[in-house]
Amino acid sequence: MKLQFWSVGKQHESYVKEGIELFTKRIANYFPVYWQLIPAPKNAASLSESDLKIKEGEAIISQLKKEDYLIVLDERGKLLNSEGVAALLQQRANESTRNIVFLIGGAFGVSGEVLQRANYKWSLSPLVFPHQLVRFILAEQVYRACTIIKNEKYHHV
Image (tube, rainbow, N blue to C red; front, top):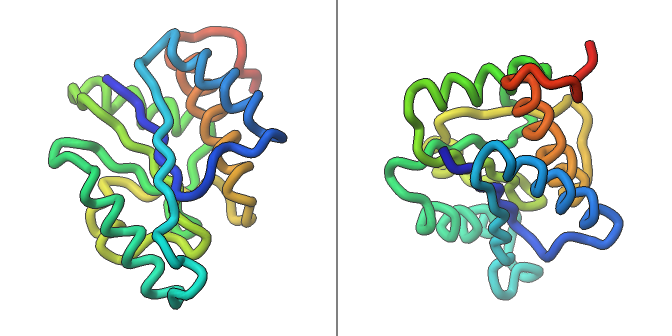
């Protein structure tokens, strides 16, 4: 099973880049993993919130494969604890999912089309975080889930 982390926006900021790289490297000990940054549409500043979400959604949908299992990070998604994330990954592995795409949308979220396409909607927290920080949290939590699955000592209850 391959893991892909997709994020709409610019390159990782220096204040989170090192941590993202660290946890991505650790995840690679369990699953092939990579980041795909989806650039904001041209003239994004001149688009309405709705039009921006539609343009970003078109870019996302065009890159998804039919068989991809899409997990959208969304504030209205299901809250999971770390064991729940591990269970989700294990379930996907047990069902022979070939590719999981974790998607961090743009500043205004994702389009209705992307939400409809999503196989799962996951909320990291009821709090709102900067997108750069969400990237770091996502990488760390997926690594934590990997260690839970393997019953390794990184995770403490």
